[in-house]
Image (cartoon, rainbow, N blue to C red; front, side):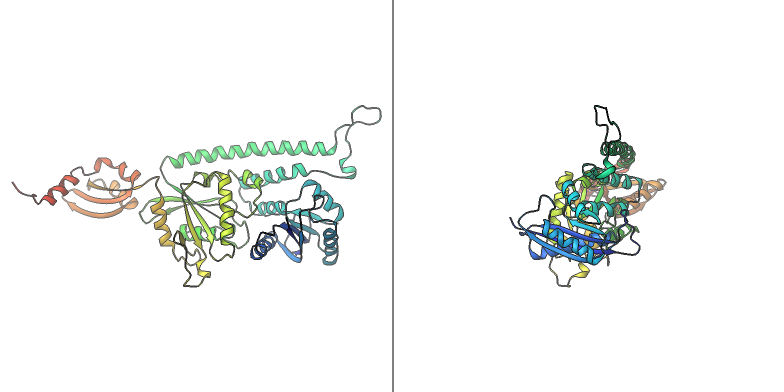
Length: 447
């Protein structure tokens, strides 16, 4: 099968200080010829945006077409010579491959290039490391980095020399490689223990939260689909909304009141991406627990993206891996302010603009209708006016259809969450139905 590969070089921004100490970048990748030119260009643009999100400036781009990846270097000796020449001519000090390199491929390429070599997964991990702010997020990033680097440990020269044994001894002693692997395994075990402690605290917090049945709605979608902007518009929060990829890493949870007066929790989660490394999904499972526990998912999609359908497929693949693909999902087409006014949208999608607020009322009504955990019910109440606390609670949490005063009693007809109205069951007017029936018979007041 014919395949295409691409490579590019870049120079860093002045304020970019990558851990490898590099000041420029070169990249290469492989892609299937079955992908259209538009998808190929979109994939290339996405990879370039990943590089920019890490703080780099692109200096050169190299694209290759080959029957299959080279087992030794991914791109083959001829293309590797071209990359070496590009690095020399541009002064690049970092090579990025838009493809995962095997440990042997990475070693072979690094042996030829006088610069640091980073593949796609390492680049994404670097961006994650930059955006992690909470203790949990930083632990998860470190775990993913260690899991990825462990099978790729290797070295040459004195750095991997034996640290034990010698002349006259039978055993070769322990190599530095074995020492490094043991240290990494110890660190991985420690991080897993710390993450388990975080999960215990999260479970306790969720248990207290679930004592009162407040549904959770999670925003999911492709990175840079505008989830954080929509999250801010819905909840009034002020989380970071950036065009850079993976700007939101740590989950955010805010309360939202629906048109029915029901209160829900809305969660903003990390964005997905094509070929999202499996190790990242595994390491960030604790962060994605909000998606697993949510009653409803809002799949936020960039309506202006030329690869709208491909992004949908990629997000659904990650949801399948998380085991939540069977949850109720509302398709939300965001960024409609970037489209012509006469644009026609699919009937099963809700068009909105997180930037301008257009369509948010329709989205809130759709969320209201889709939630089933704490369904709406209608009830009538007869409450003494002295029970002001009960009346205030119903007015805050339910929609009043009727309200009248007779003597010391307040008659209410309300629509609201079952959990709220059933809490005041003792005030529900049992004679409401019979009274309605009597009025409909026309026999009210007769002897």
